[in-house]
Image 1: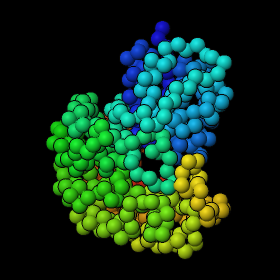
Image 2: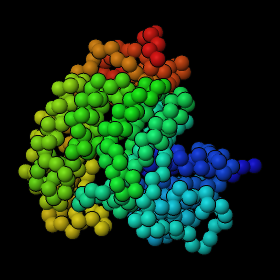
Image 3: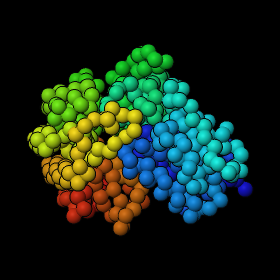
Image 4: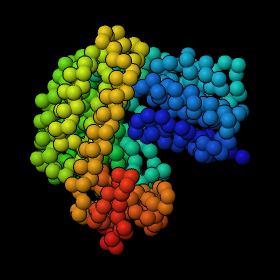
Length: 439
């Protein structure tokens, strides 16, 4: 009987793509992938370390894993594993910790599942994580996260990602196209492009060979994929040529997620962001000029050291006035080995919580206003296979979440629907998908 492996992923879309690739490595090695609760012989926990809370989640997942299968072999990979290998090795029940340069050699390291008195740690300096390893998720949803870039050369003062993932590096355009064709052949209808600093795509072996725009143009020609979505892109790297191309693209959808982090130029400078708020305003205005119904998401951090009440109000008013559709709000948490950790002007925790709550309320208001603007429109919805309280959901091209009563015929299908009403939980609800099969 084959050994069983279960995966648990914390963090970003990039982690999900890499977990799926690790799953294929285990499958090739003769393991059966099972659900977390199905008494696996091996647990692989892919970690994030963007916030302190992510570290705590890792410890909790290990604890729950051992309740399910007390004798299982527990391996930790991901950003937390690179940054804090010794700390993880001391978590009761952890058997192996693999750093950024080692995680894709997991089968080689895990060939012997004999539990040792102390956790085994394989963790080279992050400077050794300079090879790009392709990854994409497949088989568990109607969309695929396709990793095209890894690492980051930026030096934002709050961020540990360069310490966890190394330098910026990319796949080749030719390799990405081959993977996109493979994904298309599997029946997946949507690709989400992912990376640590996606707009910096094109660096191979330390030298720039292409631009992200070159990849966008090439992917737009791939047959068999209905939609391509850009997961997140820095405002200084979201060029006018990308915006203009997406506006008339065959496959790229009208949805951008653009990190802002603060609406105060003072705080942006302290963060060492590579733009001022004026550039952000210009990017949003250009998108809305060419794609009035485009969905725009924003990352924002509250409580950064030195953020006064006036700075926060500046950010709040800036976001309130922008034509954006939703916010991802992060409460600043001090991270070791970052410049921000040494800065003065720490914001009290209760103040950070209050500011976070205000922006979450603003996000709900923005999303509802955006959804309200879409009512009455005929849109194409790609339905997913989830079921919750008898309902399933899907997304329009411009990322409006739509729910309808579950119908197995709709799974992974694109249907033309009329957006009729906003449900109590904030999604747009339709009574039934129209009988027109679009794709």
